[in-house]
Amino acid sequence: MEAKSGTLKELTPLIAAGIVLGLGLGGFFDGIVLHQILQWHHMLTNIRPLTSSENIDLNMLWDGLFHAFDWLLTVTGIILLWRAGGRDDVVWSSQTFIGSLLIGSGVFNLVEGIIDHEILGIHHVKPGPNQLVWDLGFLVLGALLVVVGWIIIRRDLVIRNS
Image (tube, rainbow, N blue to C red):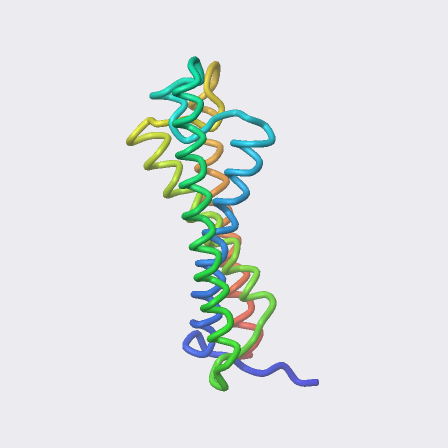
């Protein structure tokens, strides 16, 4: 079967859906793995450490709000994907979709890391010794995901149009 060609315009709805879905899934990964399973931090641990039941409750509330936001992003990504699926002018590509998911997850890391870890300082990836290294690693991982995602999409475009 011959691969269907696809211009960036024909892939844009799929890319948008993948990026938004990647943002939500990146947030869920952060919240589930770093907040809940590893318990390295919660949303406000740097300004409200878990030293009292009031601070624990406040961090739990903000973690819940964070997860609610991730859920909204994920639902929005699913809606965008559903709409893209109903369009005849959208080219479907697993590579482009995976690349878009990676970009979204990477953008999540970059935005959350820069705003929450560095600008607001409300928490760090892993507080304590070497917390700056953990924070920078989180940002580097985010940048790497964006670059790899873009390379995957670009490569798919080149292959489809050659």
